[in-house]
Amino acid sequence: MRKRQVRAVIKKDITAVTSSFQTWLPMLLLPVVFSLIMPCLLIVPAYKYDISERSILQVLEELPPGELRETIFSFGSTNKQMIYFSVHYLFAPFLLIIPLMAASVLGSGSFAREKERKTMESLLLAPISAPDLFRAKILAAFIPAVLLTFFSFLLYGTTVNLTAYRLFGGLIFPRPHWLILLFWVSPALSLGAVFLNVFISAKVKGFQEAYQLGAMTVLPLIALIAGQVTGVLLLSNTILWFLGAGLWLLDFFLIKRAGRYLDRSKLFTTLAS
Amino acid sequence: MDKPIISMEKVNKAFLPGVQVIDNLSFSVQKGEIIGILGPNGAGKTTTIRLLNGVLYPDTGRMSVAGFDPVSAGDEVRKRCGVLTESAGLYEHMTARDNLLFFAELYGVPEPVRQAERLLSEFGLAGAARKKVGTFSTGMKKRLGIAKALLHNPEILFLDEPTTGLDPEGSRALLNYIKELNRECGVTILLATHLLKQVQDFGHRFLFIEQGRLLESGSFVELETKYLREITLKVETGLAVSGDDFAGFPVVKKGPGYLWFRLESKNAVPLLLEKILAVAPVYSAVITGRDLETIYFIIREEKQ
Image (cartoon, rainbow over all chains, first blue to last red; front, side, top):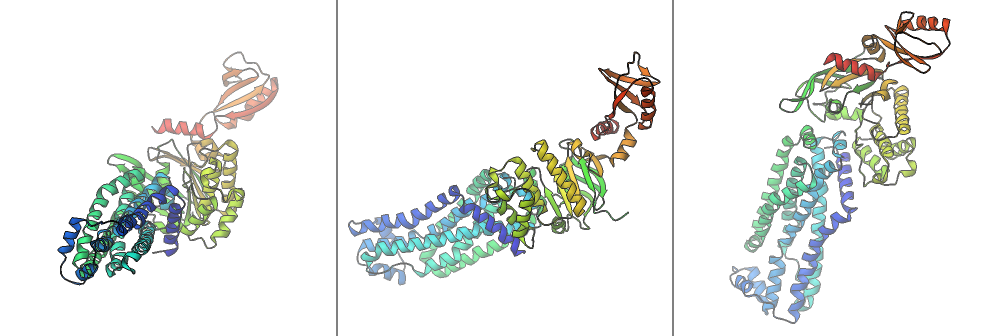
């Protein structure tokens, strides 16, 4: 890998995102809704009203014996139990959905936008190898997706702790599983989503096609994994570690295999056809 | 003769089965030559450039550029070649300077900032260096495109329709620069165009391509000798001719103050002029139809 070239492509692509209001604004909306608005809507009314929801309380009743059950039931009020459970478990999949959304927007544009702007040929005519170009494009979408996730996590944690502090009399965020999600599972899932979107982007002619195809095939598949995380979180952190490891292995396998489908001539042919 | 810097041997390329874009194409180029690749739109000129830069792979045949195979050692080829594509391939949301700096990184230019600033100044773009390329005129984009192609001081420069969208002044300035570059730095230049008049004066050799096949190649003098078997001389004279010939020279056209004579070769010009001057004044004489375009149409007619 020639680092100087890979770095140049990453820098160019990230600058293109940060300088385009239309690209970064929609990507910021979801984190703001998830990390700021939703916790506020959940926690603030709990100071005055009963927010307990029967179906969730039923889930709590059925929790297996252990540290989580003990912690939740150590809070006397159902409001606190509701908040603690929702904040730590029901909302957790969002930490996976945010990078997926970013990966989808950034990944699908990676090659497709170059084709639309007629700059793809310039890239292919430069002495950067096709695998390096592919790696650069993946990293250029992966890095912002991960940074956005970190930002969302910090915002979410701050919002939860600030709004719930008086109610609980102390900080309630995070629990250890958040860190496994943030540093292990979420990046692995993001990388997979970025890879699939970049791969599709390399194979189609324009951004619209890449985005739609990515949204139709990649997002539902990965959202399904994200949706199951609440269940996994309730089982144990060990399973979460394994889930992350499985995803990293899958990423490694996909990226390794992608090389044979992405030589320069094939990349160019999608441009010319 | 030295080993050619570029060679193509029996290269074939089809995008779809049965649709041959390059058909058994063979030619070679010596270091320091300026070669005009000529042909109508869709002849395969751009595909030839893409094949030589390893962006497309041939179905069959062999190629060599600067001693490397563009398929197996594409990056080595691309390090030594600069390409100006028809659309210039610049990032419109970036400034001229940032475009050059980005490509300088891709090409591994040792002092990117210095080189970018030197080229911006050389191409009269120093004042617009920090403006977004999207605001540039076609001429400015073309000049920046050439600057981009020259960032890494390439041995070989490929220019694909470099004057498209340029006004006559811009075209002339660009072609003059290319000529200078070849003369001063010995850069080998392959220029693909369908505008034959533009390359006639400075191309060392010409390749006529049609439907991916090489119809003919050679220097202007070689092609002229081979294909222009008759010439037409336009003479500005006071001579009045009543019949179809004068002193045995056929008159093919008459106009006020002008006569057009058909001659077997340019060797007959002095004799004709001598005969006219004996009876009438001659103000000017010019051989018409002695250009690449005429030769091109003769070749097309004969080869098809």
